[in-house]
Image 1: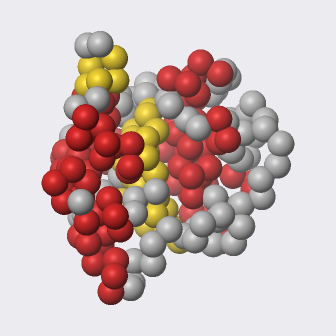
Image 2: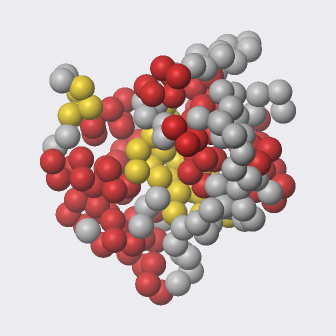
Length: 205
């Protein structure tokens, strides 16, 4: 279960917060206002119910085409939750797979897997068919991580640009079709990428 540690007002976030969460610099200015309303409304509903979602260990599955803003949305949700005191970490499915192969350490005393299990909320970006088919280091390991976090009531966010209804995506569906782990949101439209802003997603909404 995640740590319930919420501030009355969100903390102002700085460069070191983003670096600690491993957020790509291109997402530091992520804003919910830059996505289409059809996507914005369910994301905002999730954020409005953050205490309930975090306590239940309920994450998000963001599905949509390239350029629709999935990565920025995942990073933005992490920023928002971190501002209210939840620990967070961002990684890609490829980095996770390579980390398993190389037994990568996050720090001298903590493995990458331990880091992914220790945070309140984790984002795994860009889960591809190639990662899903690599069952030894990709699909099975990623699914196991998500299931472990679900069982511990720790939310996980995942993103993919694969059409999950297509036959070729069967391996990927097997990876992320996990009961009681996600709310699925179809990310539609195109993300409006403007100049970098040092702001928290959702602040002032």
